[in-house]
Length: 228
Length: 228
Image 1 (tube, one colour):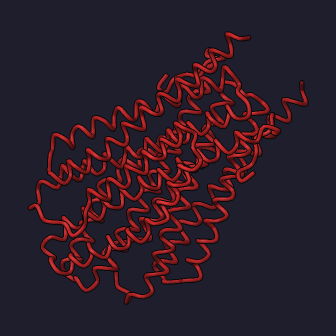
Image 2: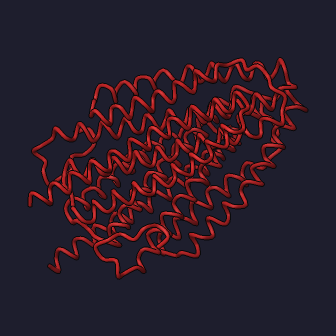
């Protein structure tokens, strides 16, 4: 019995470690993609596309790990919640990789257009989105509800910043229509980064659901509903 | 034993039925949102926002159903794959609802701008995306691999159509810069519809993974890897 439990907890630890590695890679991919896009560094953009392939592979592997644990260990209550949270976070991180790749692809085609100065600080917007992913991952690692809630609060501020970004880009499109294509590309990159922030929010919510469920010990054999 | 199995299969059927209902609602939400957007029908747009709330509630309920089955029935092999496929499809459908709501919100703010004629057929693009969701759901209902593969094939054609749409909208922005805001809104709606098609593709892939796994009977106790 002891051996089985030890094996079980090792499997859970392994799952968690792989997921954290994936998260770090997804976060790196976002930062590299925006740097590559801004500096028109085609090597950096190509590297992000390779990272996306690695992220996709890692996502499948993690999904398989989670399914194997479900199939062979039949976990209950908090362990079951942990595994399903991992599966959801895994899916969010894979999509973060997709957004990184979309930005990198845009960076590769951007080289056909003259470089312009953007009326927005894309590096800062990228750092904010990548920072939200990092904070959500840290909340996952440390099971810290407050940190997870901080991600949701950061997200609340986002609407206004997104509006300002939109206004700045559209204003410039009117002033300098000859740079319309570049400004449109920037607008789409901003939206990709906004979706990355959405995924960070999803991850934070999954952490909250998992960790707050851990305190509901009297519900063994039944999974507490969200909000309980 | 018989009673337990009957209960188990009833629970699986219930899960499937709820998911199909959610899928139909998500598909309707997309069509209503684009109709509301195009006809500047604020009542229709508001109805889509109410549908999004219902979709979110249904998603949580379905997630809970799936978790309850995992916790109480400890399903194996094909049943486990079915339940995890349902959880993933559930998450995709919830995001389809988010995109419908985003389009509806854009429809509500669009009324502050003069109506213009668009250089693209947004109804057709919406019908294509909603049709892909419907086809993916039908593949799920009938466990039809060919139908699921047809969704992936439709998706392959999408890149070229998306490029043409982009070119048409950007061309018009140059020609008629006084309609830039409306054209930008349309461009974002097109991208939302493109993400809906992505979700249809995800659902089709989940169906393929689930159904093709069903034929691998000799792997009882172990979940076949993707591609096996």
